[in-house]
Length: 251
Image (cartoon, rainbow, N blue to C red; front, top):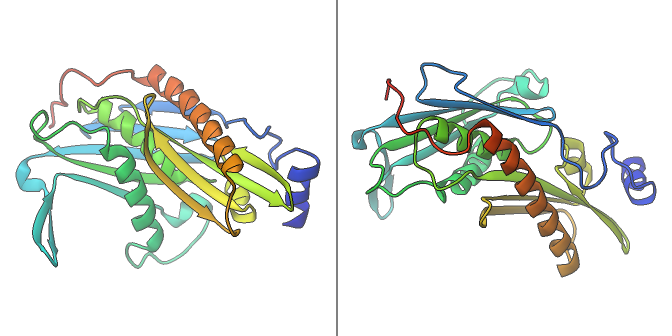
């Protein structure tokens, strides 16, 4: 831990040789699952998410029986993180803290771009299966979900993308890392996930292991995230720039 942190602070280099502002190679593919209403695979470095979109009627809405009564949710996003995605073997005993938390973050990020019920009365379910993970799999879910929605013909306002920004701080010296790896999250001091469109932001989540961060650090982090989002959105637009005019024949 100390060696890697010192390498970043003193030698200004990262584990994989990237610069502090560099983003890993990205690829986007759509319509990989012919029977699904919409599908996409989003890959960033060694993080990959396979995302499928299914459309249903109003009868398919999720019914939630809460303390204040029953409510119905026309939009669901489920995030699956199988052990093989990080080279592990473990028992699967139901949904865990990770699936719930990351799924909720991705859901809020995507919900902001969805059309209103009066314009698109379908129930929408997104399922993201993380096939491999080396940092920011929830952000890959947001990117893949946006691509799959357009592939399904859902009239979303624009693409939404996500990026993770990290921090290593030693005394008064600090560096901000764009598109962090799992090791940089584990050994670093901050994991700031920011999602948004070309127009603005849709969700923010920050985990920090230090007492706090200054405004100067946050300003750099948000500037880095904005630059990363613009770069990723440009690449996503090369896969599909606007939603399909017709829904899948299976919808």
